[in-house]
Length: 248
Image (spheres, rainbow, N blue to C red):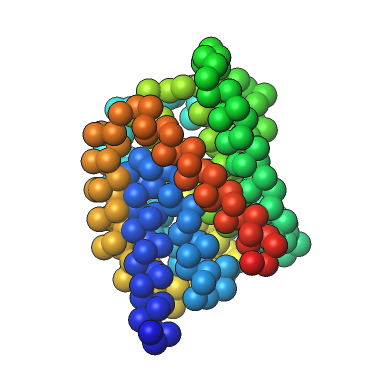
């Protein structure tokens, strides 16, 4: 397979997964940058996919405009803004591998703890300000560096046992806000170049297709199956991030 064909295939697959995540299968989108990194640098991959995330967000915002947790958004959005600011200020000093390792370990720890307690029925946790600020800041920072803020988000939100549509809507709206906030610092760092924007334009169609399919999957999947899939995807993404940190 030629390099150009491999580049197109990786780009379309990454964009399709981003679309699925915006349709409600939140963790799938975190695989986008690692897949595109197979054919280009991580920095360029993140820059190309950011406009794709933003466009896909528009569809997700419309679909889930009536399904979201207002209290979680009030806590997590400002905290994420702080994390993004930290990521921007430390962009030249932060190691991609260090962030990948941190996020991966958080995700794996959460999954193992959830599966260890799977036969128990702990009460749903309400939104908490202190925990929300902590995980929201980590989420914003990791999202700025490598679009991998979802694991920190899951650690905070999944124990609340939100209805699946509310969970999907809160996820879609929150990450739409985060991606919009990242546009200015990405532009200031020179990552939204004309070349990267042209490359992103070719990925809009598979991203929108993924969004439509993701929305339909969320609506037909039973709630227990939906969250089981989310946790499996969280584990897969976390393992991939740890392997990335190890240079594998």
